[in-house]
Image 1 (cartoon, rainbow, N blue to C red):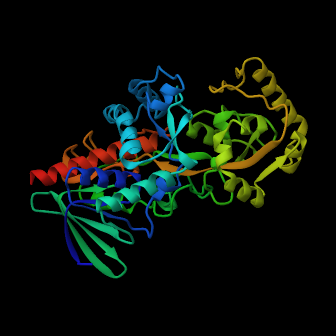
Image 2: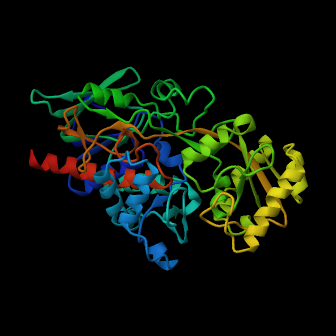
Length: 463
């Protein structure tokens, strides 16, 4: 491979945002390259559940959810981030959510479940589209195939180390290394940073948020280490909101990975502590649930559901591999009786029975949760089998990063765009405020990935 290569657009990071940017730029006639420091593509976008919030989607319409709008989703998003997100950025994300989802479906070829949407914590409506398989594999596989078909080179094991500017302050190239060799990728139109956050860099996390310390493992892909943020800062980019770091509340105590099977809580599963008592609304914001868990005995909790819930929960059905693995690890147990579930984890049975009896009574009375106001309603758990899994919070998403405008242009410390530098996804820090609502990451990365790719391609044409 030549040490110096010339392109219209150079995209750094082959996750969802990077693929969206590369495909969009290529579709606008640009000559594009996508470079990735890890041996494989996908990053967090691959291991994510990949649900994508979309107001007024075709699936909502099929399910007769007729009153959702971009404005309603924007209001939920801003409130969920304690109004620290940029309203203009959030507005662009929500308005473009539907056309971007349709693009994923029709152009990229992503298959979404046709009759099912999630309502994540903090959302006022069920609005998250769900890809087949309930992970990002469906999305990244389709992106990879499309990039190959379009002739977009995807170069792995290539770590970007420096953004090169010309005498006018424009970003015109990327210096990168692969093994012991150095490469320069010239970018006529611009460089798109789509490198993700820094959730897998424990030292960096603790630096910006000392409360998230050695107690926490991470859900993130190993490449999510944040060096590109400093690379961009050195090129003049402004870092904002770096202390806003989210933990995911329901994770494997051993590895730190998300327990996707325990998303049964979106279908009625309850959270209980070691004393067998509920302590928080199961559909609350992620940060609220995480903080509540850390205050419980041992700083962990259990997710409990029965066959009544499992039979209606697609997320339980689809994650049989997790079921087998977590059961083998001893952090998950199945029992014909509630007592068996309690005894396995040494939970006082009388307490757990009282908790479940109360849930059953409220379920019988229409599902209204008088104790914690579960917005999805409570489900009957009077009969087995019972499924119970132990869970802890893990570092999950870094809301801080580069400040961008609505064109996905990276801004300097004076709020001015840096010519030739674009960014999208978790590397940016202006969308989510203090807390990202579930399902908003995929909307964010896809919408702004496309905007960044389009902008860089336009710059190439203009030069």
